[in-house]
Length: 107
Image 1 (cartoon, rainbow, N blue to C red):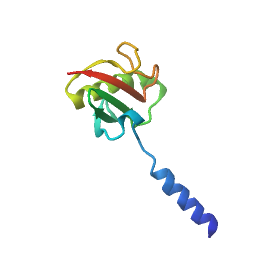
Image 2 (cartoon, helix red, strand yellow):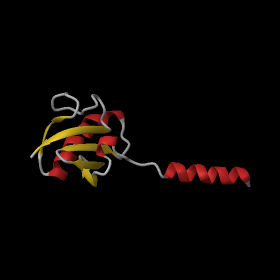
Image 3 (cartoon, helix red, strand yellow):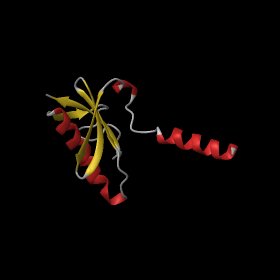
């Protein structure tokens, strides 16, 4: 019985995990959107946006997922991506990452 209780507790704790924003975006409005056929959580705070991909993908779909990061940010804010937070021109703020990006928006 004890082993079953520990297993159930572990599943409840893991089930509570989800897309959560970086500390800079705590308190930001969350928007769940579809872009490039994938689901994204978009957190908007001021002129900054954090986008987190919610779906798992295969290796060959990473370019599509990176395009989806920008599309999701622009669709939620109605603004264009001015550049990423982090200094990399027109690419995710976490270079090479197709699962998360932070952008400055040009409204």
